[in-house]
Amino acid sequence: MLRSRISTKFVPTCGKNIIPNKKSFVSLSRTLVFKNVQTRNYAIRELLMPALTPTMDKGNIKKWTAKVGDKLTPGDVFCQIETDKALNDFDATEDLYLAKILVGDGTDDVEVHRVIALVADEESEISQADSFKPKEATKKQESPKQEQAEQPKSQPKQPEAEEEYEEYEEEEEVASSAASSSLPKGAKEIQMPSLSPTMEAGNLIEWTVKEGQEVKAGDVVALVQTDKAKLDFEYPDDGYIGKILVPGGTDDVKLGTPIAILVQSPDDVAALKDYKGGEATSAPQKKIVKKRRLKQKTGSESSTPVREDVNQGSKGGRVLASPIAKKIAQEKNINLEQVTGTGPNGRIIKADVEEYKPSAKQATQTQSQPSQSTTTEPKSQKTSAPVAADVSEGNYKDIPASAMRKVIAKRLTESKRDIPHYYVTVECELDQLMKVRAQLNKAGEKRGYKLSVNDFLIKAAALSMKKVPAVNSSWRGEFIREYHNVDVSVAVSTDNGLITPIVTDAEKRGLSDISHQVKQLADKAKQGKLQSHEFQGGTFTISNLGMFGVHEFSAIINPPQACILAVGGAESKVVVNDKHDANDPSSDKYKVVTVMKVTLSSDHRVVDGAAAAQWLQEFKTHIENPLYLML
Image (cartoon, rainbow, N blue to C red; front, side, top):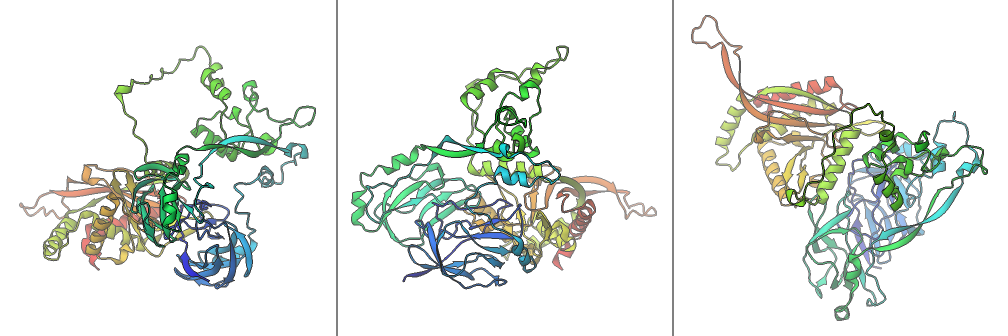
């Protein structure tokens, strides 16, 4: 039997659970088949059955080569899985421990995305797996009954009549498939892959192969722009490109969309010459989907009052909704009176708001009827300023948001909303640093390096974190994780948005090495050629706007990190000369110094104010005494 070795990549997701699209397949840079347990950033994670081939729906677990308690490093094998193609090794690509095996040796027909094991980040966390009961991987959310069960026991039990559910049908758009009975035998779809954990759609920049060309497993077939960077799409199977369905230069291609057809014989290429499957992929089809919701009771059916779907709010009644549901509704400008609650007593929960789709009638009512707060406003109260009318089309232009811009908007909004930011600022003198920098750059002319002020800042920040490790930490829900290595993310502005390439182990690198790394990463970032490991997983971020004449600013924390340093520009300032000699007429009472302000934004869940102040004190000491950076 053919035997191959395929690994699945574990990608840090800032707390977001990642379950790969069942129909998507990514070869050497696919997203990981695990998800965090319970809440974000938990140490125990579910290991899911991977899709090791594009056509794989199920697999057979032949043998576990790792045992419970074993530490696995990148390249170590979890188990051997028999797919519809071959016998494959399922490898780990990060350091972790196997905490519990849920599907044993010799189990056949294990569905893709089924939980097969639990893994832990630390050896001490393995015991947590014993008390964990895995949920079905296909289950997308808790049922209202489960959510009700999580309410405090002191609450009165609701009558069973209020927990009855009914099925209803709803029309949804689904990506159409190019699969057809007209395809040659053995032909398969090449689908838009998921090349980053936050990717929902990608831009197909160009094809590196042509129709009729033979491809081998691992060959690059296309260049894809994700929400982060431009990445090579390597296809894992042998064959011939029978038909290209989505041409190069196409933007916003959804994950799982068929973009080409792979055939097994060059003779099959001609059979696809007039194949029109590509036209179907451009227009989504509509599908009737059966869903489940809480069945509303009339007064005769139940003595317990049930919230009316739409009219209760207008009658002065209180709309029952969870705090998170209210927050999401406010952000999305959704009228909660129009939302059907599926929680206890008709309570509106988070899932209700996220899945809410206003009907045409409700949308018309929302636009034509004033809100309750407006109609009940006293006549004596002054009216607010009129809303500005839309300007004419010639006075503005709409710029489509790139995939990266959408991710930035989403992540930074979550950061500002969920993380308790606070800010501490300190002023550093730069005169000694500038002198040392000039001397080193003069010596480096023959050695081919030129140091920037930012290189000194990265080194100073890294050494300061070894002194105050609380800053080099992250919030993990039930505990704080303190990192031993210092990986500094450096904010780089590109045409598509902000990206943060990482200088790994910055505390161990020399200034010239840091300078080389920053220049190399910045160039790759601007060209969109960063690999995922080069911009994911930093422990601290530096954002420098000093070159634009900015004196000082406050930056938003890049989760799951706990801190970010905002660096302002250098400026001259007159200060008292602490070395002034009153007996020396030539000694000046004042002097001019070059200063720079830096502001540390911190997550108060992780870093207390005293720790932030201590870190800034260490940072200031290193900047004002740059020779410390050489020790």
